Length: 332
Ligand code: GMP
Image (cartoon, rainbow, N blue to C red; front, top):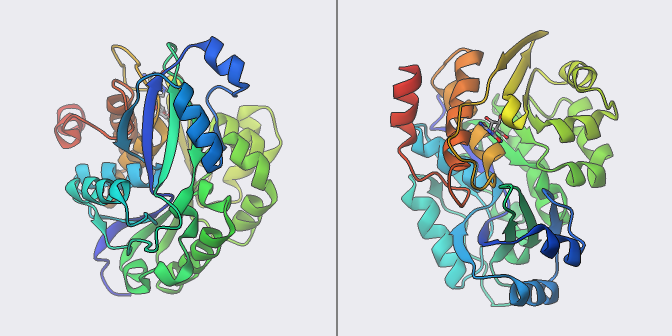
């Protein structure tokens, strides 16, 4: 096996976030499930955008956020995702490259579908409710993969959201095969409990076919995947089916289970939680960067907690502070 050139290569939906404050009444009137992600079409995106308060556009996308966090922590990261040849596509590419991430996926030309956007409503309790129009992102097909790049990455990281549209699902399955043939590890995040509800069989099959080496989930997702509503029982069951399981628990911190050994860490204190968008994404970034630095599990978990704490202290899912300095202050 050759030395990897990248520590982590992330594949996901390339999405520009449009973030606006909203109250519970707005969510209720729109019939939205707080804290979840739903997919919408172009017409619904236009309608809902028209009803939202003033929005701010920030590059996002779950796996893209993770790639940015990994790079900002000093590890070598790449991202694969489909944007269109339009202004938002340019913004997205510029933004992710500016964080130090290798991004070489060609833009989709032809002007048939625009770059994806997620209309994110942040309620006063800092929860985020996402309404995503996938646009160009759902056209990420197998031919867009640079298989050399996949082989060059120590860890391939995939978001569960990619399972929704058929085309990127096939690209993801191909990337898993290429990564494993090269002797690399595959990491997968379950993304969202409603996404797990939609694709429980497919996700369980990925685990049972040993296609996942590192599984990321939160409490609701692991409960949904296993069908066990007791958290510890769900963790115990899932941990038997994946070599390394990482589960985040919001303000209760996070755990990892490897070879039957469970490690728990507390959440980092946050003065004011403003917007929890990206908490899980940045947690994964910190954890993966910790693995790249050969840190023990408890320290990798703490790196995840430090990166997550930064991102929830302000609007948007991309870090604003110097993550490397924050880790150095806390962990040395
Ligand atoms: O949700 C992923 C991770 O983000 C958790 O494991 C925590 O590290 C962090 N996190 C999420 N929500 C909160 C919160 O309300 N308070 C604190 N301190 N951390 C949180």
